[in-house]
Image 1 (cartoon, one colour):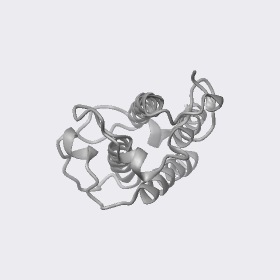
Image 2: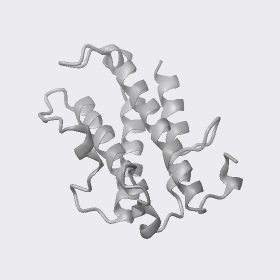
Image 3: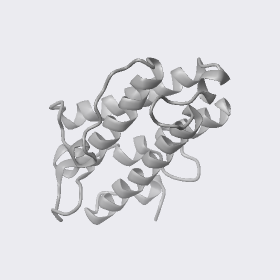
Image 4: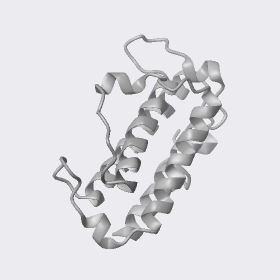
Length: 159
């Protein structure tokens, strides 16, 4: 299972496979493109990245420290730039989170990955799979927004 999770984490973030990875989807976006919000009912690219930072980092911290104390905030709040990151800082932050996830999984025993998450009733294998799917879903949203803004290069994938 560890090898599958590692493969999927790399595919969803940095290594193209069946779909465009997040790193490719956010590469080359200017701060103004990242913050553009032509439809106020939709999230901007930047807001989506902040949302991914929140959830991926929260569970990374829980994985590293089972006693990690936190309070989940309402999902709508996770799209806000609560840390005051610039666009470039947000891109670096999400990369660092995925790099750390990959390192943590690579260094983990199967027993840890099969263990149940406190107060969640799911194993880490399942939760990490959910985080991967969640990231892939939002990566698709980012690419759709880039297409709407005419700033997507189809040579990177997805016509």
